[in-house]
Amino acid sequence: MIAKMGKGENLYGAISYNQKKIDSENGQVLLLNRIPETLDNTYSTSYLHQCFEPYLSANIKTEKPVRHISLNPDPADRVSDGQFVKMAQEYMERMGYGNQPYIVFKHTDIERTHIHIVTVCVGLDGKKLPDSYDHPRSMAICRDLEQTYNLIPATEKQRTGNEQVFRLVDYRAGDVKSQIASVVRHLPKYYGYASLGAYNALLSLFNITAEEVKGELHGQPKNGLVYFALNEQGEKASNPFKASLFGKQAGLDELQNQFAQAKEKMKADPTRAVLKSTIEVAMHTATNEVDFKKQLLEQGINAVVRRNDEGRIYGMTFIDHESRTVWNGSALGKNLSANVFNDWWNEQAVGQRQEAEKTSAQNQSSTTGNTVEKEEAHALFNFLNKEQPTDDLWIDGLGGLLPEVQGEDYEEQAFANRMKKKKKHRKRGRQK
Image 1 (cartoon, rainbow, N blue to C red):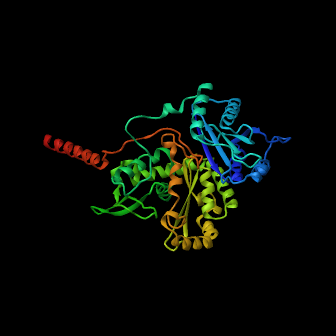
Image 2 (image 1 turned 45 degrees about the vertical axis):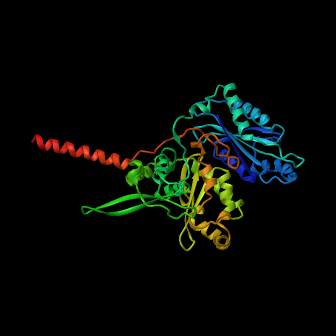
């Protein structure tokens, strides 16, 4: 079992995220701790938020008082509601939150049935609860719960040996081809995206972009794809790499097949409605673009904004890391299209871009171009990494590593295959 723990300031958003699961019949409240129950056992976001108000009002100086935790057994585990309640109670007691108000939500919208717990880390005296070494303590508790409830240990799913972690591409570090390969070879195994724009939005989180190229070969039109590494400003920072270097799945033909399959699957995906509602909540509670992105990050969603040279937004893409799907805003709803966000942020964006030009690169929070908060965005992919602290986000390791890719040259393999075919043709010719 894996525990994800996030620390933030948007309590309303955390509760609303879980309430939307209930509203879409993909969740339920399993337990209320130190929160009064209602007569009909139904709970609104406003009611639950109000129950935490005394703790938030008493808060002295804790910047991120909200804790959003999820406990995730293996998909093969069969855990009853009663067991989920007991696990949540033991986990919260041992983490030091036993006397705090908290809500336990059960989510059933994906194959991996799991629970979310929303609480605050400040007491009625306004002081912060001790949280030193909370990630190692959380991991230790999970190992004990696995034994107590006979769950599949998460550590058994991790591989050992010579492995390369799924990580950001650094064009300065050298061997850019292998860095790009470690990303593009494996994204299709984990994420669904229905267009090249959506694919590029996902790649941009790793400092990569893919560009379609067109030409002719022997008089016949030929389309292909090349990949580039990007710098911190989202600009091309490497030579182009042909898709054939990274295998068939990275090429345009195979990607178009993936787009078609994903588009059909996403039509009936219940994630769409939940994601749409979550984004709408952030739109109503965020004060600006930076705050909007931050709120979504706290809920495991990346918002990738694409602007043209004049600064106009022409694309809004949302990456839901829990369902691992990538959505264009217009596909979720007309109210989430690029034009809506462009009108909303237009005046703010102008001011922010002017201010960003005056600041140093280290303090940039610009929302221009394809720039995103790289470090935070990449932390959302830690489900592919070894378990490690990610205190500021509630997306944590789900185990599993990617294999080493150095030394593999798919273009060379393709050449070898072509040579084998030529040899066969020549052999048949001699027999004649």
